[in-house]
Amino acid sequence: MKKPIAAILANVLILISAQVYAAKPWNLKHEEVASFEAKVVDVLCELSGDCADNCGGGKRVLGLLKADGTLHLAVKGGNNFAGAVSDLIPHCGKSIEVDGLLIKNPLATIFFVQGVRTGPDVEWMDAKKFKEDWLVANPGGKDPWFRNDPVVKEIIEQDGVFGLPGVEPPAQ
Image (tube, rainbow, N blue to C red; front, top):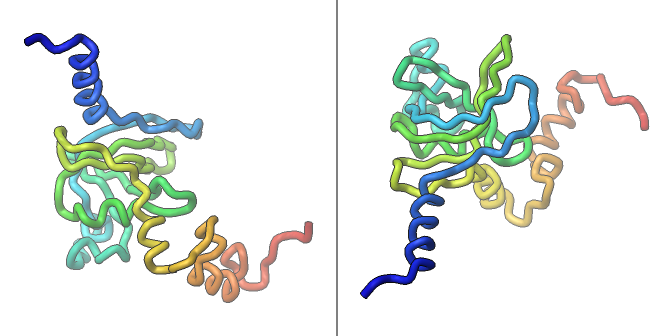
């Protein structure tokens, strides 16, 4: 018995949507939407040989090492003012596929991770794990997370809003 055309098209769309992920442009200078396969690495280990177990257990900057030797710093995830470590640390030492924004500033090239997947037949996951982890660590935490984080509040109390003791923003 032949399947109706609509059912066939629906199956094709499901297969295609599992394969395609499109990073959202932020209209930043030097921005390029990019998708590539890379190994998740501890940047300090790669650059200095100072290596820790499990890429530093989430306490170090992570990078994406491509097969051609290019290392991209993964400095941003899908949550405001949060890095990509929570999304990448489970893949330490493994190759994954990432999708996001490659910022090719002449001073430094960095990567903002928006999507992660572990293989071509695996569904893309949004890079927003930081917020989930933060809510577990801060039950009842409110948005925006960065204004309600106890660690952030402590640092601001100690070092000021700009990270410079005694330097405060101008009065409004």
